[in-house]
Length: 152
Image (cartoon, rainbow, N blue to C red; front, side, top):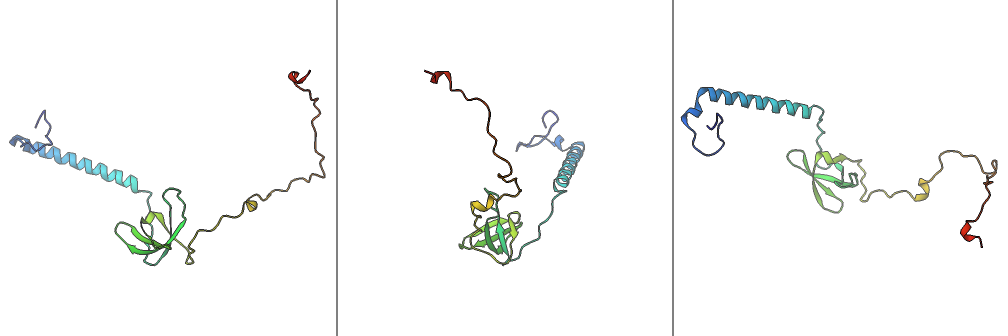
């Protein structure tokens, strides 16, 4: 004991450090600490939800850790501890992923992701605009003058 506090070292403690009042204070401090940790855990987990477990043989989609897209598909080949799953993709590679990054996929799986539609399809006009025949094109009536530096 040094300045009324217990030392946290391997130094042998004095026999007065084990007095009943210090033991009671230590137990009270530990109880407050554990109560605070339980309260923090409750607040942290109050909005969490458990995902349903996956079975071996279930087709799943895997989220890419960099792009956050669900662009890989595979089949669950093993279940580990703490929501860990072993997923085999079409190339034969086995990924070890947490349940959070796996989604059940439809039964029909394709080896490659769907191709993006052609560029022309994305530029479709969605709103009807007035035809150019009904409104003549308007021209500016401002007089154009060349800059002074071009005048001889």
